[in-house]
Length: 269
Image (tube, rainbow, N blue to C red; front, side, top):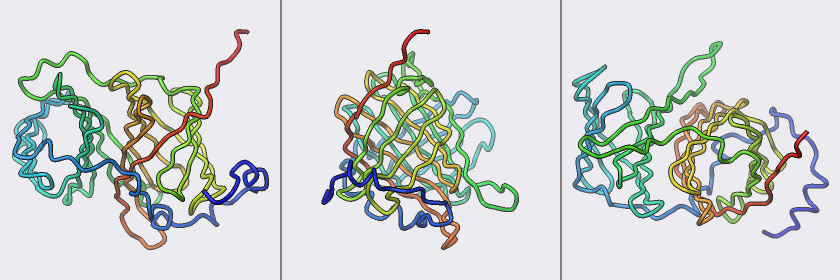
C-alpha cells in the first residue's frame, strides 16, 4: 500500500453510481490471495440428499471436472458436467464452486466431511423491470449415509464486526456488519476506491470462528458467497453477476487476508 489510508479517506468525497467502474474492472486482480486449489474430491462420488427432497449425485472425475445427476426429486434424470474449483479451507472443510451452463447458474457447496453436512448456495439470473438481475437460493444437504447432526444454519455471528479484507496488494475493502441481514462495504483502495454501499446479507455458522457470508448488491447485479475464517483471518469466496456495461457474465473465485478493525458493543438502555 503506497499511501496513508487514513489520510486518504479523510479527503474522499461521494461517488455517484453513474461514475462507478464496471464489474469487470472491479474484479481484475482479485485472485492474488486465493487459497491453493484442492484435489481432495478427485475420484469421489458424493450423493447428496437435500432438504427440498432432491438427491443429486456429484461425481468428481479429477481435481477439475465433475458430473452432476439428479437422482430423485424435481428434475430427476437431469445431468450435466463441467469444471469445478475446490479449496480446503480447513482440514475436511471444503468450499466447492461450479457453473451449470444450461441454467446459467453457479452452485457453491460448503462441505463438512466429518459429519457429511453440506450447505449449497445457487445463484442465477432473473428479470426485474426488463433488466437482468441476480438472486440466490440456499438449501441444506447431507451426504447420503453420513451421520449429519450439525446443519449449517443462519446466525448473527458477524454482527458488530468491522473487518478489512485484502483481496490483492491493491484491492482492499472494509465491511461493517450492522445486523442479522444488513451490512456495508467500502473500498479503501483499488478500482472502486472511495465507493461504498449498504446491502442485504446473511451469515451462516460452519464451525467455531468459521462463517459463511452472503451478500447481494443493490446497484449492480452481483451475488457473493464467502467463507470467512476468523481464526486464520483468511477468506475464500466467489462472485456471480452480470456486468451491464459490456453485457457479460461475471464469475470468479477469490481469497483474502483479513484484519478485524474493531467490534461494536452497544450500551444497555
